[in-house]
Length: 263
Length: 263
Image (tube, rainbow over all chains, first blue to last red; front, side, top):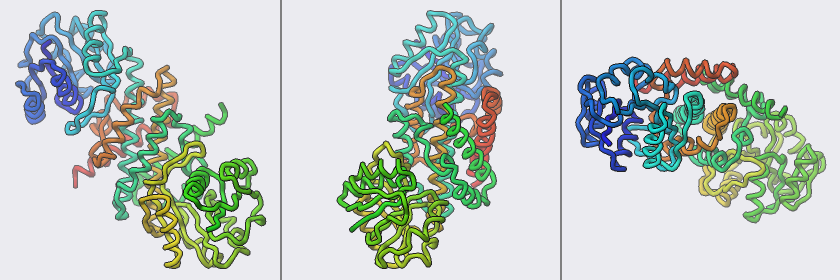
């Protein structure tokens, strides 16, 4: 199976590296920016192109991992003048499969739900991969590909995938930003961030051990300890954006508590 | 050393259980609510009281773990008519040591920075414990106590402790709330929360492995992918509070990115 990667960002990097390790033949990498294209192609030991017209027409699988706006814009060109049997997939959580309709005969979605960085290699083994395709045979192809990389391969339609992605933004991107704010506040007061490691570890382990996050909630907001909360808001006076976040997240925590008490 | 616990909440429960296991003699538990008092006293195999006047006057150490507002209100009564050599400490991150001034001769703060639940036993071994006291000999007593429970015992003054606590709220309480929102959204769409475990694990491991959380940031907000963000905001239309959180946290993520690029 000859595979072309269109995009050379975090996800494309990690997915292509894992596929290569598993034995897939990556024949080409495309990225608009020369730097990204050559960097990834170097790691994969394959040629790269920076112009869409130069993408080989006879690959079996085209994996498109671009920013959503670029994907929608470039899709007609990507699918144009390729082999009729070629399978096109995108990796975007929030774009429906239907964007391929009318442009390709075989198409689908291959969505590995994980946070990828270029520099940090991830084990695909336990990453949930959600697949979707219009034709049964393409679903099978994507499932086989998925299973060769991970133990957790599931079908998900475009609607479910949207909510998977949205939840992932909260659970990963937004949780990580809370770490960022903590790190900044400590640094401003000459305290090292690694003092927080045991707390971060326990916070996660509670939830990974099966405790419902809503039940695992602790802190001033869930007790509605206005005393503490007012002090914290005052401490954040140099950071109006975080001050506002503090108020709003606290409100949401307390709101969730009241709701779960009602149920 | 005879120890009295004043308060029977999450922190008091876990700290007293650990101290008992380590060999300390817990002679009494106080809580205003009979249920909490008897539950903890049962686990510690010691007597309990629900009235402040009944607290024994001759203990060596009084550990006060109450909600901040209750602590400030009850403190004069707690310190009154106790042995002159008794050491009084509170465990609150956001209250200064000075609240004891004028009420007790020996006083300080013993702040284990962790998220505690009544039901989940924690290993104190790696929990950072921050101590503060007015007199050198009391600092030593608290350090000795701390070191008998944990490998990480540090002095921190009231100002540092305030920021430790504030950072802990972001890093633990607020991060956990992001898990809560994710769990709700998945449940509403018949998706099990445990699909998120690998993502949560990786998010945390990046940071615990030493990556700066700001550099570890991924997702639509850091790319400022307005396309995705607008879709997500629409998906949240049934949850105005979370919709607002989505916007504000995204703004803060992007703001942080711009700032770190400037530096």
